Image 1 (spheres, helix red, strand yellow):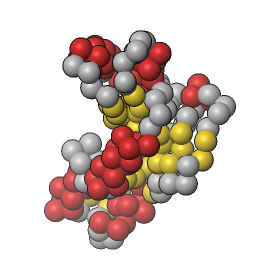
Image 2 (cartoon, helix red, strand yellow):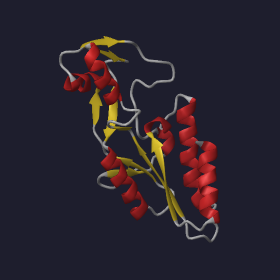
Image 3 (tube, one colour):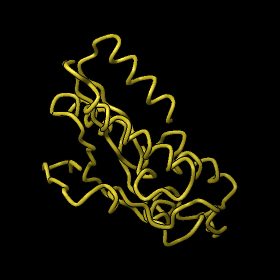
Length: 177
């Protein structure tokens, strides 16, 4: 995430790319593991690249969102595979998660590319769901077994942290930090 971000920024500079938008994750807000820390570092590199652009016509921003419904990292395909076994393994029944559809994520990136001035981290106003409610909506017949939180996993996700700064701006469907 760190070297990749730097490579993208340098390539944008070398090729006179006018706008770039990095994809981030809720794990970058108050990171508790290495993955989250590298995503936060990537966010900071993209934001800071606006200060290193010199005279270039260049604008970099970041979009940060939660879980993409149905993606490889989503719990939905995982639960769908478990339906046949009649058992859902639940990490912790108190876990809320932010949820965005793929179409909403794409729309947000396009919006950021159109509206960014440079240096913003855009965060959508998206719903969260409780993991038990999601499991129940997939199948009410499956037993639910709580297996416990893993090291480096957050009980409660957040999209904006104190380290993002106090100047959060409400843009309607999104926040800019």
